[in-house]
Image (cartoon, rainbow, N blue to C red; front, side, top):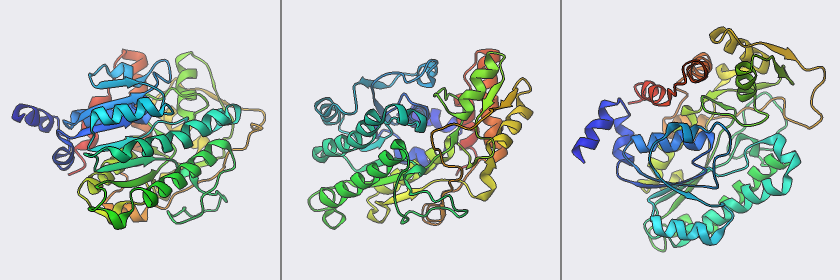
Length: 369
């Protein structure tokens, strides 16, 4: 154990996080997805005993598969209650991170029922399955910034603003938040914490996450990357849409800090949390493409002749003041660094057949403690 501890410390990883997660049993749903693969890899490097639960590889290539590291993996559907409950009972986790989802707005228009079943009922299955897990201290439910009723105003949404959703994906994430709050009130009530149960539940809302290893459909960075790899121009549908962009490691750091507080038994943290950059992390789609082109000269683009028919929000911003003040969380990599790190990851992959996830993880962690 001492040798393992020395190894992770020598990697330059956060000692604060090592102290929390080393040797803890962590159950992650959706661990083969973009964010899930980064999170499961990070936790494994912190010395956690990670079990991943997913129905397979969501894309080809798949970041999780490329990382080629050994964790316990269970291949099952998040909506299969019997299998899920059995996996949690067998694992006896200290903490669960729930990321399994249908994560795409455009895909939700084509498959609304699958989106709702996965994102809403999948969350309900997870929370219901966790009721009888005696060792479980914490659950972090990952939803999205799109859970808010978006009025496209200029200021950021706070955690107590109204939930809603124009498209099926956004509606599913608002519903997942309501389901989470309902289970917390009904089965994991904070007034009963320490008496009838020992589990604290929080939800985390983040969006517009970028970074290496994302090959999802109808998402800006993967569209740029796939077109460039094929020596094609990427088609930009909505160049003036504005988003707060952040590197994937930033919200994951927030999730880990939140999980730490919950495992410490601090029930005041068992609520909803925003993790998003400030105004200096905002830029338009076309500006992001141009910033990527600075780092990757081969990128070429053209503006689509007309915008898509399906509705997608033109502006959506989070207010992360609560996370800043109470969790001590803030964006570590600014907009320019987030974009350059993303470009660097894909350049190394396509030009050198090299996966630099661990290199970037170490670089990021050196800025933490």
